[in-house]
Image 1 (cartoon, rainbow, N blue to C red):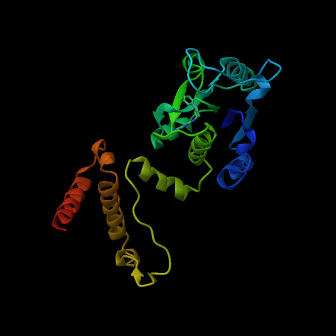
Image 2 (cartoon, protein in one colour):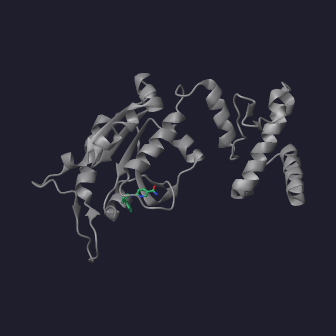
Image 3 (cartoon, rainbow, N blue to C red):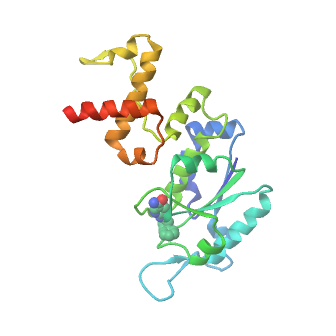
Length: 247
Ligand code: 58G
């Protein structure tokens, strides 16, 4: 996958993109990231990228010209189809389903906004898709772009081991994960659930499934509302609800 990022602060990406999984994905040739300094696409002497809003009011708005110019220049470099994404609080909320969808693209281009936002014509005529991480405001789109890139890269074939990618599928299902434990089996008197030490793989599988449903019901009941559970899961969920009602 090729990832292009248009930003006023390319150096913000240096360290985060040179560590761990993203570094490995680049080394393996699975991923190529190109950063573009927005100021390079300005035509005026002062390399201005923002201006006051029409209609008045506080703050500055990002001018359309440098952003359109940047995308048009980059377009000539990319010889495959690509999706142009704007990170903003007005976008659709990112979830794992969207992450998987983005991971199927050949190339992604992220626009990182600053100030009070971008000229509406960028949103209307340049951007394919607006994505938000959540209902809060950041000073710039850079950190949001890093989050999206990290989540997408994680889903590219060959980035995770096969064991991990299989486990990921359980989250894609829309349930939260079951609790995990590692050695020692007794840490400061807190013991690992005995079923996990039993060696009974069928029992372990059932325990984990039940815990996934239980954790989801307790922490994110909203996730269960849209989920289609099979009869076995429905039965487990009823059991969980009954035992919870007692305490
Ligand atoms: C409209 C409004 C367009 C993402 C603001 C662009 C980016 C939060 C998120 C902007 C962001 C999020 C202004 C600074 C986007 C710019 C940037 N804040 N929730 N801030 O994903």
